[in-house]
Amino acid sequence: MWGEGGAPAFAQRAKGAYLWDVDGHRYVDWLLGLGSVILGHAHPEVDEAVIRRIRDGAHPTLSTRLEADVAELLAEAVPCAEMSRFVKTGTEACMAAARIARAATGRDMLLVCGYHGWADWYAATKAKHPGVPAIMETLAHAFSYNDLDALEEELQAHEGKIAAVMLEPALYEAPKPGFLEGVRDAARRHGALLIFDEVVTGFRWARGGAQEHFGVVPDLCTLGKAMGNGYPIAAVCGRREIMDPHALVVSSTFGGEGVGLAAAQAVLEAYRRKPVIGHLWRIGAAFQRVAREAFAEDLPFVCDGYPCKPRIRCTEEDPERARLLMSLLLQKAAEYGVLLHLSGENVSYAHGPAEITDTGDGLASVAACLRDALLDGRIRERLIGEPYVEGYRAIAGDGYGGPRT
Image 1 (cartoon, rainbow, N blue to C red):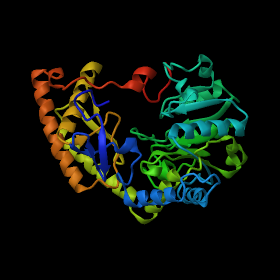
Image 2: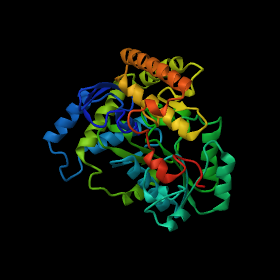
Image 3: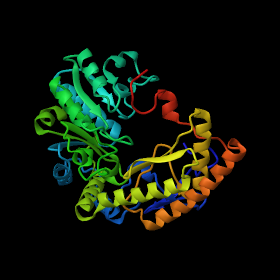
């Protein structure tokens, strides 16, 4: 997604807020393992906890106290997490939440808003879903964010059939006043559960995720990404009367595996002791400031989103021209030692003033190149190799979220 030939293809190692490619070049990393690394690469407390667990056996057949300890930490931090079931990926957690909701309500259909992984049940809501049977289209439907009327129409059209409404409570667009509360109330009126997909927002918007930040508590939620600081761990959490007994349908050989759980315990305990959330918002706001200063008002780029999850976006209306301009921005940023990403940036606790300064300097140089390219029209000629290709979006057709067309 950076473009072939114009950005590093393989990483050699990573530490803190930096990664080094196989050629030895160093980059300020604003992607951080697709948002999974929240404290910084190779964080010593997390890695030491994992090493201790490995030495005692990564997966010692029986459940360990560690599994209960992490569940208790989640119950303390996340408002709806009275009970938890552990899996390995965000997609798996969303699959589990859908299964639990169906078991709890005796209904089959789900309404979704946002991105919930690559599983069949969700992929069927996309314009294109190769490899997914067409019959799956009848089991889930998408509605648009911040549109309560669209949600109500879907609930009424499938009255008595909706098991749950699942949505990402926020990403780059803020919920309108009353939207999340309205989704909760509409779901309850129609006998459906409310599921917040907090794989992205969890441990980033607030320690307790978007449900803490916005003050709207769902029946179930999914967690992942930042929960393990780069180690594979995810969870589905929820109210006790829903999870017990319905979460028993969730079964995974590696659900109780110790490496991810040890990492999660270290991360959650770090949140107890360190001002992680405040740091993410402050550094993210600084990132947005230097990006906006670099682009000024004469370049077709904006830096939007939340400070804890900023995004650089091209505002050029022509899609192909926008793709070339964004490719040039990503490639030039990498050339100046700043690794950005098409789908937005992920601030970590390891980012600080030095990284903001380096990023600001890099973006100022990138902006100068962009101005020259727009002036002489030689955008494609300045690219090294090929422009980026959005693989998933190219397959799905309508990108992340929104109604199926």
